[in-house]
Length: 125
Image (cartoon, rainbow, N blue to C red):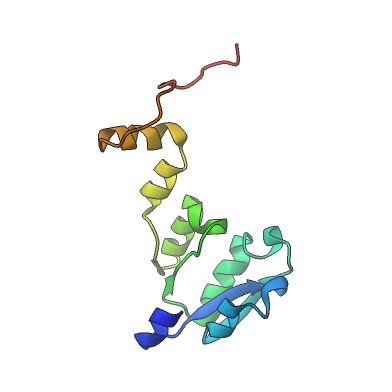
């Protein structure tokens, strides 16, 4: 929020009732409560988050850290609303969420990785 303020960009924070007095809520130009303390009923409730975006006319979304920031479908939903996604692209979220694919990418980039099984396990036996 500080960088946006420095650039003259208005910010909107979404929050749960548990976070109503949190610094990030106070720092925003506008704040929208998206539900009760339980994250499944607030921060992870995609329809409520999308409605907050529509209600405020937000033009871009920074997904924060954790919660929906690692959810490629949420990223697609944001892009489907015609809103800019200020985070990694869908492909990166998807690939880094797949342990086997992320290991392949690291190897291709020349990153040292911990040795281990290189394939997928086909059965539990």
